Every structure is written in C-alpha cells, then in structure tokens.
Amino acid sequence: MSTKSLSDAQLVCNYISGDENALSILINRHQSRLYGFIFSKIQDRNAADDVFQDTFIKVIRTLKRGNYNEQGKFLPWIMRISHNLIIDYFRKNSRMPKFKSKNDFDIFSIISDDSLNVENKMVDAQIENHVRILLDELPNEQKAVIKMRIYQDMSFKEISENTGVSINTALGRMRYGLINLRKMIEKHKISLIN
Amino acid sequence: MAQLYSENTSNSEQLKPSKKTVKFLIDYSKSLNVVKLNKTNYEFFLN
Image 1: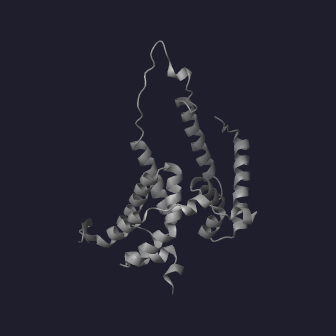
Image 2: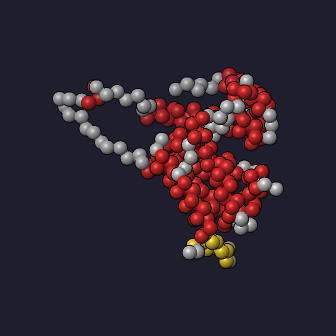
C-alpha cells in the first residue's frame, strides 16, 4: 500500500511505532494548510516559520511521549496548537512605544485611531462569548461545520473530507446551522451588535 | 454552488514553511528519544 494513501490516523500510529518517514508524510501533507493559516494571522514569514516549528515540536513531543489519543482529528489538533501559539506570539509582541502629546501640539489631532476602545473590546468579547454559547446549542453536525468554516478557516471541500460527507451536505449543514442560530437570536432577543 | 465552494484559497496553497524548518523538524524527531520510567518521561537527544 502506498504510504501517501494512508490516513492521518494510520501515519500517526506508524510514527509512534518508530516510522520516522510517517512524520515527513504528515508534514508534507499538512504544511501548506497549517502554514497558510499561521501566516494569515501573523503576516511575517520568519515568525510564521517559528510558530510552525514550535507547533510540530509540540506534536512530536506529545506523540513520542505517548500522550496522544487518536480520534481521527489530527489536523484540527495541530491547528488548535498553532492557534494557541499565535496567541502567545501576539502576547509577547504586544509592547508598543509610548507617545505623550505636548500642550501646544497633539499628534492625535492629525492621526485617527480606528481600533476599538476598551469598552467596545469588552462588548466584542461578550458578543463572541454569546455566539459560542449559541453554537453549543446547535446539533453536533451543524456546530462542527460552522466551527470548521468560521474558526478554522477551512474550505467546504476540506470540511467534507474531514467529516466524510459530500460538499453539498456540508453546505446544507452550514445553511441550516445559520438559520437555527438566527432563530435562537430572535427567540432570546439577543443583540449581537457592538 | 459546490464548485464555487470547492475552490481552495490560492494563497494558502502557495505558502509553505522554509525547507530548513522542515528539515530541522525531521532531524529533531529522529534525534529525540523519550523513555518512560516510573510514570516520568525522560527526553534526551541522540547525536
């Protein structure tokens, strides 16, 4: 059997058993998807390389320690690891230079700041939390498709491959999931506007 | 509709990590050895 036709689960199993080539296949198979996701957030090649490397170092250490439970979700797992490392990256790089305006001249009279203020950020976070709670109320199939599409930025082709259904079925689940979300928002009179 | 949503975003397909990074990961994996003793994992690197 060609190694390229092996599933992620089988490759992970082979790797844990000592087949180093299985890791090469896994990296080769998912590198574009993973690196593209990282770069879309960080927008810096060197930093994206670092995050990609750190992601797979965590993967390698977890697999070699025998701490991985195979549930057929290798790609979502590594995407989640990289997502958390991206958050760590932004936390580390959050230091900004301070500028104090003088009495006679205020730079902010020329430069405008379109970013959200603290209050709006809190409202935004609350809205996102409400959306997550509403998502949890959906049937599992609809919830999974919406999460993969919105939070993991997967295409419908990837979603259909991941869930084992046709693209049209994935589209339908997305559509009905959104319809059900709208119904819940109307029913509970929730405001999702900042 | 299926054809529309089946298109992969072209940007993500073209973006790849550097070959140096991938080579490092493969070498890292080959050299990393984990031994479990009394519920503790010991990691060491083989030359």
